[in-house]
Amino acid sequence: MMPDTESSPAAAAADQPFLRELWYLVLPGSKLPARRLVAKTVLGEPLVLGRGPDGQPFALRDICPHRGIPLSCGRFDGREIECAYHGWRFDAEGRCTAIPSLVEDQAFDLGRVKVARYPCREVQGNVWVFFGRDPDQAPPIPEVADVGAGDLKIAESMLFHGPLDHAVVGLMDPAHGPFVHRAWWWRSKASIHAKAKQFAPSPLGFTMVRHRASSNSRAYRLLGGVPETEIVFRLPSIRIEHVRAGRHVLCGLTAVTPLGPRETELHHIIYWTMPWLTLLRPVLRPFVRTFLGQDRDIMAKQQVGLAHDPTLLLIDDADRPAKWYYRLKNEYARATAAGRPFENPVKPRLLRWRS
Image 1 (cartoon, rainbow, N blue to C red):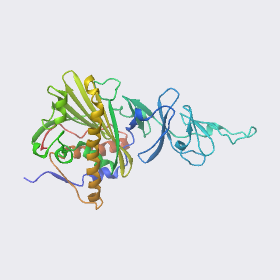
Image 2: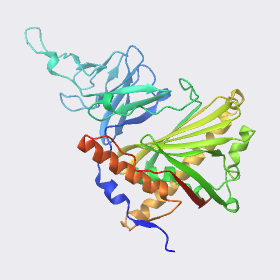
Image 3: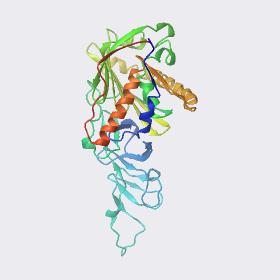
Image 4: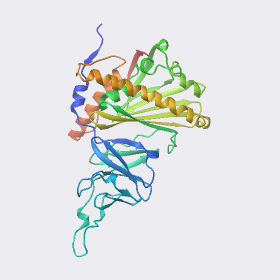
């Protein structure tokens, strides 16, 4: 029997612009301290982020409407941004509050001047920004179960050179571990064996149904007992792994955020409820960065081949999650454009592969 393949499944998805009617993780909240501005480019749009007087994050378009200089070049006193060029001031809502060059008898309505403001929320320790039309009609920001408000333990961000779709497909790829992440503390090439996992549709994506953690994922042994894991993927580019070991949980939220057409930023956030694991945090952090760096480096090598625009083939069952991603993305774009409800194209299925 010939393998089930799909030629260039990314073609239709690549024609779609970024999915804008969804929330994107822009940065961990710990990287946005009070009285400091942070400049970011996300979905090709310049943002300046800060915290208002109430401590809540805000996001504005990082361009002064006067002469176009980035507002992030200016000063911020915790209440207002002062443009570095001419001192125009803007509050956290983007409203202009002062133009120093005006003299007393020059009537000018400051209400005419406003910087575009993006809906911005902090959920479980992460700052999310919405780029669409109506955040109240958007799907909710994804949350990690069983960690409450989210006392995140480790937050790492890393720049990936490559387009969003390939970064997301790498995020959900179940077969690359023994090759890309080969290490004494994770997996070896000799550890490859057959696996079978049940998948089911879930909101805006799909779920690898809870199962006993893979025996060749050595790091799970730190948790003791018989860890069980569930992995959820949902649009636009979110992966949540929820591992339960007895009464405790270890959860990882990974978000791939597009900066522009050829750059993405990967945010990996880890939560746990084991007090003893917190003592190991300084030791664990370098392993996390090494793991993410392996994904970054393999993607950089991939770009050398992709520069020649080759025809790509996806096989069953190992590449089925990638096929689902492209179908999910295309369906969400079509549903949004037509103003109709999203219909999840994923069906329950047992997938089998070796890794």
